[in-house]
Amino acid sequence: MTVILLDLYRPGSVPLEAVPLLTGPLDCTDDVPAEMCEILGATVGSGAETLIAVDPEHEAVRERVRRGERVIAAPPAPGERLLRAVDVMDRLWGFGGWEVTQTHDSLRRYLLEETYELLDAIEEGDPHGLREELGDLLLQVLFHSRIAEESDTDPFTVDDVADTLVAKLASRSPHLTNGHTGPIDVAEQEAAWEVAKAAEKARPSCLDGIATAQPALALTDKVIARATRAGLPAHLVPPELRTVHVTGDGGAEDALRSATLQFVATVRATEKAAHADGVPYGGLDADAWVRYWEK
Image (tube, rainbow, N blue to C red):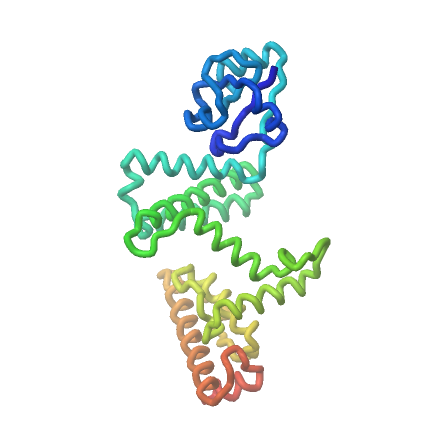
């Protein structure tokens, strides 16, 4: 006497341990998809010794458990509950309510709010708040993916988002695919990541890809880090980017952003001038930065 529990979100997958039991008569509960019952040759309410079910709380399952029958279920896999989140998003969308009226643009403020709330939870060291805010951020990923799925131009799904992430991680982390096991050198890992990223993007400027809409202080920090990593000597970074002067009228944000964008323009102009003289993109050393900066 055995109960075989199918995965709610993958009912077509049968636990390997249960396969030998599928050759005899099979009973099934009414929550098992009809096509699955037909494939297995199971009949609802037949009373056979082996019961196929989906819901572990189904009355027929609970009755058999009370009688001491063995239960076979697939072991949980990390991340499988993400399927439930995707399903909930699809169901919400299916109701045709507020969700279907939203666009990528209309959700921008929510994405920003959730990001800052997540940062607050990290700052506070609150694990419960962190878990909740990560869930809210995950909702934004699911929401934007669902909107994109309905797009008339270049639609994509949440699976496409996941595939893109996996491909990026595999490309930038060679130890995932080259058979490497055990700890790796962090410096080597970071270097390999940057090399792969540069090869993927083939960006003409070291500042390409920086989101300029982010807060001015974060933008400035990112720009300086990216430029100096590309070999720009520290003394070329203007002092107005290194010191923020707080004013009573709230103009510090605008002043810093303006100075940073001017610095960005100068960096790009320097790279362009160097490239015009035959210096490959990404090939400027400290002396070249100074030489073309002065031009």
